[in-house]
Image (cartoon, rainbow, N blue to C red; front, side, top):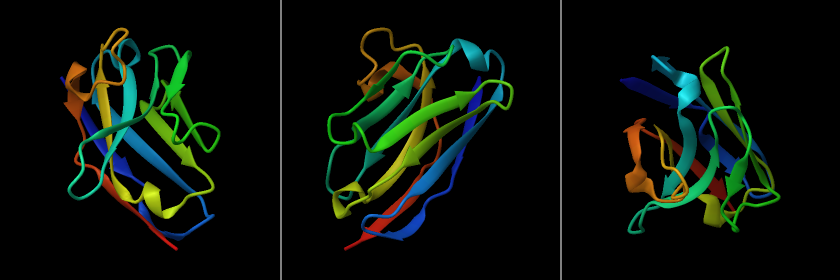
Length: 124
């Protein structure tokens, strides 16, 4: 069992930056891939980024590639999402997820554990 708690969301102007954190508790943290997904009102849950249990490799959605960076610190049981050059289309609730998705790392239903989410709002 893994519990996940996100933090770091907020209101930021377009072009700004935020860093999200997701603190995990439970066993075998290092054995899980950790992903970030987001969901805007009226839209489906969307893959953002994922990092493997060891820290590499990482994968990103095309919409965030080059702007967002995912990383993890297994000693602190925490995963981060550094978000730069934010725009209005990045506005959503951001959710942290843990699981063993295999090659289906972009499929939200392959993840077993979810946090409650943190709101990110980008004003234009």
